[in-house]
Length: 114
Image 1: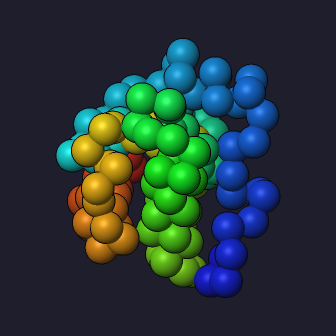
Image 2: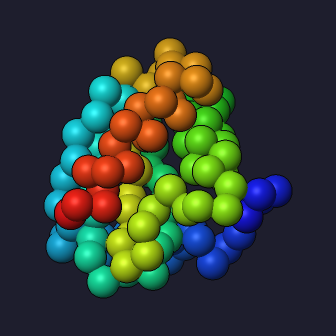
């Protein structure tokens, strides 16, 4: 995982996103809403709506989140047994890489406690 964000650690199907969103608990941070579902496979999904901005802005926010999650290296950001959907807030538009990483790092314990 040190050099990428493999498919096995990503939520990829709509039904998986919907399962987390319907059964998940919400953790609010400055830039994101983290929806956490117990009994998952330790995967992460990223959602950035059109309210955030155009495609360039949305893709930038997704890249920042992927990089922050990837940086954790050998220790995964998402604890085993949890699936997380990261929903971007409007404040994430102007955030930098360090701010996003710090925001997600602070929320890790809350995600594990859900």
